[in-house]
Amino acid sequence: MPTTAPAARALADVTASDGTLRRFLHGLPGVDAVGLEARAASLGTRSIKTTAKAYAIDLAIAMVDLTTLEGADTPGKVRALGAKAVRPDPTDRTTPSTAAVCVYPDMVATAKAAVAGSSVKVASVATAFPAGRAAIGVKLADVREAVAAGADEIDMVIDRGAFLAGDYMKVYDEITAVKEACGTSARLKVIFETGELSTYDNIRRASWLGMLAGADFIKTSTGKVAVNATPANTLLMLEAVRDFRAQTGVQVGVKPAGGIRTTKDAIKFLVLVNETVGEDWLDNHWFRFGASSLLNDLLMQRQKLATGRYSGPDYVTVD
Amino acid sequence: MNAVERLTVLKTYKLYVGGRFPRSESGRVYEVTDSKNNWLANAPLSSRKDARDAVVAARKAFGAWSGATAYNRGQILYRVAEMLEGRKAQFTREVADAEGLSKSKAADQVDATIDRWVWYAGWTDKIAQVIGGANPVAGPYFNLSSPEPTGVVAVLAPQKSSFLGLVSVLAPVIATGSTAVVVASEHAPLPALSLGEVLATSDVPGGVVNILSGRTAEIATPLASHQDVNAIDLAGADELLAKELEIAAADNLKRVLRPQPVDKVDWSATPGIDRMTAFLETKTVWHPTGSLGASGSSY
Image 1 (cartoon, rainbow over the protein chains, first blue to last red):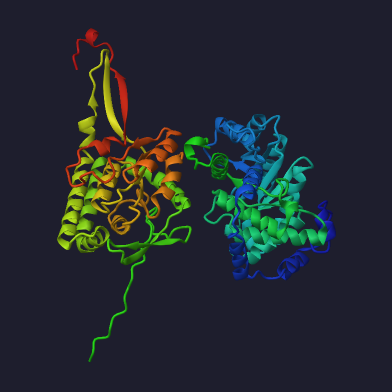
Image 2 (image 1 turned 90 degrees about the horizontal axis):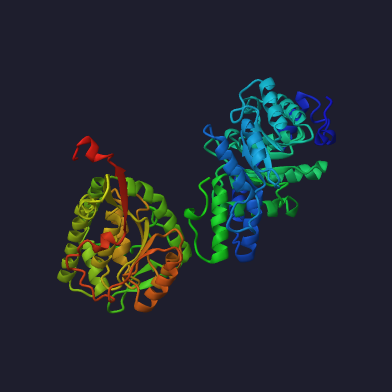
């Protein structure tokens, strides 16, 4: 099968056919669920204080994909979000910009205009987000439109139904097709919706499948289901990108999304990154937080460090 | 057959924050003694992070509590009085130990406390009529003022009067719809911590009252400077601390209720409405009535 994904070249035999892909994914070592959760929990107990905390807060702010994915999104709200992404705390100019804003495809042009001239990128969810239940043609059209409107990053959802049914090749083909539609201008994030994959083994398989198909980022969830990013499933995906780079030399980013609301949580994730894949990933090119309310908490904590007084929601913007 | 000697079952006193009973985040406790220095129990020694968590819980509860009808708040507060009535024996013992009172004196205190609670429960749906109302203005407007709760109020409970004093400063805050973070008396925190158990079982939504025990100065300082606390009642602070806290509170223009001369207040006297009005803001609405003269209407 002709494909341009460099990862697939390194593991070309794996993706040669449905059978080899299945054998490879099922041949991945099983996940020790208890060990994984214990490891994630123990890394969450690190105490990060003073200058390290200040560094972590600024890093986390720079890693936020500031997200609004509501049916009620208006151009005005997207513009406000863009302004906030560029300058999260207008009262303190030393606050870094966020990595990106994340919107629906029809809002990409509005978002693009709102962040023009800054380092903030525009990410767009596509492929019939969040369910992913649409024909491939529709999904690709969705992606092309977002890219044409200027999206720098595309967040696609995988077909969980096909994945759970064991139709891995279908999922693989879809990701490669979307990757192609992204062209060279947009980076591709692949959302697994880990809350719907039921087992850690499935999350590991999905991670490898996504990376084999050429994902630039693997992302935990849409934020639309009950279970979103957890330290354990993020740790598992970090291990997958680490192993993948060791085998193929290709570095893939990770984006936990949904359910990360406090600075404390965000710092726990940064500890996971540092301890699992190291400093190479401690950069917003390789690690992101998909979040909306997290940014306000980061800003309040930042104000607390600067002034010594606990801040409150009256001192940050409401979305 | 000899009766088997029972094991002593000692009570672990815990904080009351957000409707739950956590230990101090710091893991610290301190010894609480009675008036003759006999050990009574260990109480949590709260840290500033406990104070911060309590403020978050109080803020979260504020919307629903201030939005509840005054009548509903009154019913809930009355329910608290009902629960207190059932726990009289326990509170009598705790107050007697804490303040070195005789059993009958302590029982009087507890009775007075419950009466105080009922008194404030009755005020919830009446205070607006007393301090709000229509204002005569020189123009074609209806001009109406109504009291609104201030928000999150930090309450430093009186140091000596461990129960009656506590309720006398707490009840007016929540009766009018604010939510409270209470710092219990430093040396006699046990009645306050037990009050948390009563509140948890009497329909008071979690977070409306949060009770912390520990060193008053240590907990009060971050509360006074906290940007998300709207008011502070300094009843339990001594003169020096009160001054410091008032300076810290000035930064975000908190409402500050200065302490009466420390613990010389007669908590058993009828309180009046001052403690309620201290934590109320007045909202005034101007509503145009049109040209009354032209239509001949006199309203």
